[in-house]
Length: 271
Image (tube, rainbow, N blue to C red):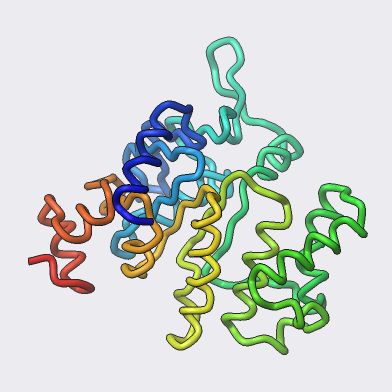
């Protein structure tokens, strides 16, 4: 997205409610406080890339958004709904597993590892949640799954098992599987980190296409080129907080915080 288009999109998104609204999000594992008060809004159709060193809380924050990890304090809303909790009489009460599963229909997630079912074909992996969990008609699910396989360039791999696919192909199937529930929000947790370098590009190309189609995305990655080309906003996290955020051309070319500059110096020349 070019600068003018990004500014126009940002101006338009400012007039609508955020799809994701995180406020004062805290999360600890024992004595280790991983998230120390995260505030973040993501507008519908926005692509946000989160950068930061290992251990900064990036992946934990993603997992909190779809309640794979329960937050200790604060709130996360997706599409106007408090994720994992319901406000009753001024207090937050945890939702049932069934209610949380319904909320997760809005959120697709792609992990570092592909996590495909090894005994299922690519097609069967994609239709498993729509049919087995959400009760969708199998014929409709298969038709949509084939459309998704075409979108990720794997139409011919529908009958293939994961062991017959390269790492990049498995990750593209995993992306199609996450899209099969027709989510409003897609979360990507370092989706290329487990791939051989020559396979990274094919996955990033699919993600660029999704970004170009207006899908709301939060992407944790070290792929600076993707952040520069596809992101509307870059967020830098360290030590469980948001250190700095802004447009890619500002954060990547002229970071203001010394910690951001030090981190980016490993990847690009910010001088």
